[in-house]
Image (cartoon, rainbow, N blue to C red):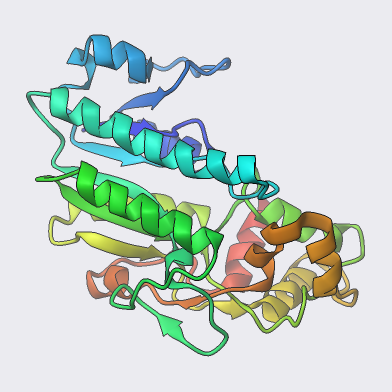
Length: 300
């Protein structure tokens, strides 16, 4: 099969690219510019939006387009930062839509990255794909706008909006930052510790993307989270147990807010999200519970 990955040099994109190349598939990585470091493999190619706008032929006959591109939320949310976060997502959706319109043989499915932030935050509610969108802060506003743009852009193609939680991997994402205080001996709960963390192992989000592509009955929102979310307190205690480090040094909410401003909402608020659609269609998680997921990451 042949896949286009927008954001293929990012955290999830790299792992997805490796997974498909190992399976013998062809992968095209597309971005605003060519990456400085490129992996040399016969079935892997790199393209820019401008080069494909001038000549879309390399993208003909693609089986699926996966859009993972977008500026990280893990930056200070200044007015300019918020603008960059929003624009990076909308611009990539627009560029992908233009490419699809130019193709004679279009892919049958688009996987559009999204996030569980679209549900808003709650200490008591449980969310699945049937839950209402609740715009209550900057992250939920970004995701709602992002999904609306995707709905408008990818018409007449099966669209999967992959609502990701916290993706656990060693190389990038949130986990290296979360575990660092524990490795230094100063780990503990953040704020009240009662806020929910809906997480997923990097290996599971990769296989879930592949699963969604191959199951034509799946469309619309898909929660990319493990079946058993945990509270921040439980997450921290599990890190402590797996890495044999103390869980004792709490980080008060006011200190986090003073340090990173509005960005603190990501760590101080949360959602209890269930991957109902994936489970209903028979997807099997390699890491449905947290401790084995962390043990696997430690073993790498």
